[in-house]
Image (tube, rainbow, N blue to C red; front, top):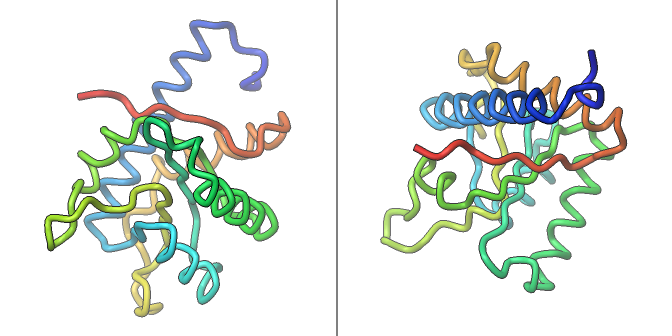
Length: 162
């Protein structure tokens, strides 16, 4: 059974499963130091070492669709990820994402959570592979592949509230 064949309740259940799996991936990757946060930092990593990137998350906050510069960045990042077979998703729960990743940096400045990359190894240390790569990442990857098969190249997912 494909994602398209699911009924409304089954789609909601599937989205919940994928949302929880994404949350697990983020917690695990964060603990291993395999997360890059911020549009500029993501662009630098994609330019330098795109082979280790397994997932790209693009997020918007309230009124984020009005920011033309951010939309241009999103378009370029989406194109790069699609061209390089990097799974990509939109997350529309910035508040929950901030809870998971920590909403501020070391200087009490809000983090730029508009683009998050998950890598399979710690940046700048290619010898260390990610031991957290498990079933949760496989669920997210399968969801992205199913979405692409249905011509939805950037699926939208909602992280579950706590």
